Image (cartoon, rainbow, N blue to C red; front, side, top):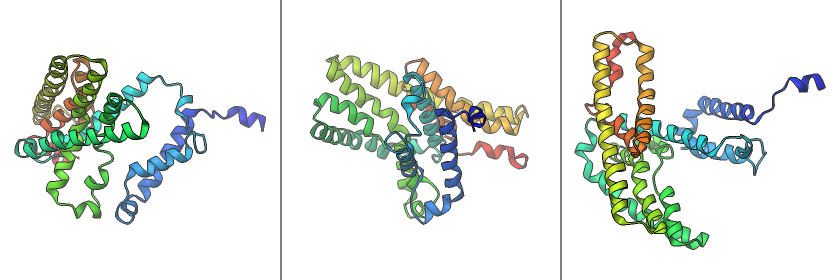
Length: 289
């Protein structure tokens, strides 16, 4: 028994690989049943699994014991969210933001601001924090996460009952509001640190958000052209073609972070610009796929 125990490597990382992969395999086997019969998506089930095996449950998954520094966790989360919002931008219809910018602006402006203030009020009353601190916390809670909106956006019987225009609007809003939440976050920080409104407007609104969105659209547009050129000249194969999406999303996040832009808006803008013409680039490969 001692010889056998010496061969085992019961580390926190290995437990994580095993539990997470087991959950995903089981969910993949019953995904249609879960979505169409139970009307559930991955996030609530993953949350229950995390609670069951986390520090308050079985104690197997404990992030404090992983030895990861905060910056590693932060950058991993940055890449994951960046790839997710890029995919949301790619899946939007042709020139969607050009035709529906008013409805999306309404969701990202007055509606999100109202959600931000209401959430801050609840945080202030329940957690008994300063209101400026509540504004900072609510800026992290107000955005609609594209992963949590999967039950509405994913292909299921439930999502089929929702009008397509509402699904597209929710998709655009959930993909962009992670980046649009930065002005609300920095507004709370400015109120707490008593910095000038001018610095908040120039640094956050103009530089991070507006310029970040434009840079993302330009990246996506030229990436689409480059990909089509490479396909016409037969410079690219099928395997590289499909990984191009993932690499472009990471490139957008990296460039946005390097330039101090809103990296989530850069990634979303890149996905939107990449599919602006409404043509799925994967169709270019035709029968070779």
